[in-house]
Image (cartoon, rainbow over all chains, first blue to last red; front, top):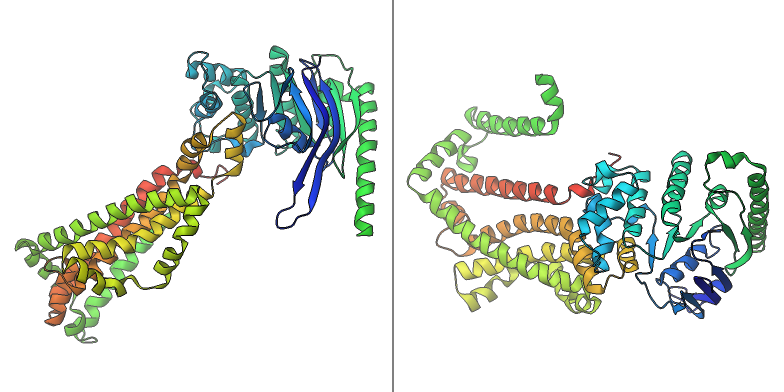
Amino acid sequence: MAQIEIRDLGIDYRKPKSNEVFSAVDSVDLSVEKGEFVTIVGSSGCGKSTLLMAVAGLVDLTRGSIEIDGKRVDGPGPDRAVVFQEASLLPWRSVRGNVKFGLEMQRWSGGDLNERAMQMIRLVGLGRFSDYHPHQLSGGMRQRVNIARALAVDPEVLLMDEPFGALDAQTREIMGTELLRIWERSKKTALFVTHDIDEAIFLADKIVVMGRNPGHIKEVITVDLPRPRNEAILDSDAFHELRKRLRAHLAEDMSSMQLVQEVA
Amino acid sequence: MIAELFYRRQALVLGTLSMIGIVVFWQIAVDTGFINPFFISTPSQVAAEFMVQFEDGSVATNVAATLYCFVWSLGLAAVVGIILGVLAGWFADVESALEPFIWFKYSAPTVAFYPLFVAGLGYGTPTIIAIAFLFALTPIYANTLSGIKNTDRDLARAARSFGARPLDIFLRVALPGSVPVMMAGLRLGVGRALTGVVVAELFGANAGLGYAITYYGQLMQTTKMMVSIVIVVVLGVLLTQILSFLESKTDSWRVDSNR
């Protein structure tokens, strides 16, 4: 059986100040194998982040179920860790303090917290900056801290919610390569949400393409590009082919959105 | 070198210069007969009188009496304000329950309650402390409340993703994140507490700077009165500066990297 099993998932929100119910995600079925790197791509409002937060246990399910290693998800758990956008570091704690934070919250019992934190900080290449505070770091460095914090708790599944969304294009590319380098070592199952097509292809074993109204899966594309990968594959024919396919999907979503706007 | 120092400390230098300017203007205005010294005395007379009051010990007595009431009122206001502010910030029901009192406090002048306190606590120190306590309470409470209530949602969510319980989020996210705002509340509270003490002393006390101001004011001894007024001003600036310094220590992490 797959490591993550999502069956007939539906998530509704009640709009604030009205009784209108808004469906963010509907009828989603998805299996993710152990050690797979899965990216979830789609235009904004397609429910991709909601889906990820549901797997994290931070959003209540309206219909269906999510199982991880056969255990039903009904809240956050030590088998999962989330890498958020950069604003999620505690600004008053140093890099080391932030990496220790997840361990403290989970009442980590696997040895010395400082040692564990330092090991992870070195893994993401920030060994010299362990006493710096977030405001002293660049956006890319802050995301390395975020990744270190998630990896420190040694989760089975790594969940990433547009972690490089706020970075400039160049830093983003470097961080993608770095993430793969780190991931190759641990081979943890990874779910990665993005709206960047190149990023979605570059990282993935499998791309989940989502559409909107309500959020649903349009297609799951297997990526057969060889690993380990580097920037060179961005120019390969196979990459171009995948990029074309994803563009077509997103363009379709865009035109349907325009139609809605014209009608409204 | 001097020019460089000037640019770095421009605000401080200009502020000092304008202060000195006012003092010089004050002295000249009186010396040239422009203003009657009976109303505002002169800087040189005030300085001389200060030395007299300093040597006969009345400066020490008055400052000690005022500071005693100040420390008690600020201390009580800090303890009560922070405890209530934290509770109200964390539990919305507590905030709703306390809301009317806060509106009351904001809209009604606290001094109006002076006779009530006199009836209950008598003239003197307890009443002064009570009035100054009420003066200082509001900003400390309000800032603590908003600090806890506005706990960063992204941080709280990140904490929850690692399995944090509500108490963890309170202790590790809400509380440390509120310290700078609380310190700002305390800084405001310092100014308010000092005002409260001096105002209450104006009405009824047998020592203290406010007492000295009314006492000499009623005797029309402007120079002697000015000594206490100047001390109050210097004390206020000094105490607020100390708090500003502590405040900047606690929120160094809020400094923006792009500054």
